[in-house]
Length: 99
Image (cartoon, rainbow, N blue to C red):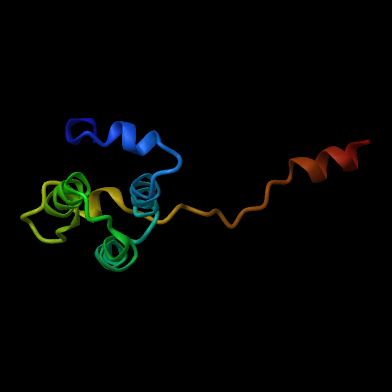
């Protein structure tokens, strides 16, 4: 981001581009097969028209969005829904029963 000049833009809380950049953090917890659609619909449909935003989006698309072998880092390498355990911690229950 810094090489494109987006560092100061990202930290500017009043910038629409900063809000748009933060949308990219919503991609990793998605299942890999949903990432390209979310990128296209949720992120690119709201993309700013500035040159640096377009360059950043192109970089992400070319390096992280392809699901086939042409991508350096396809979503199958970095996107995964959070693991939620079905186990309920019992510490609180056992502590209260020991009193």
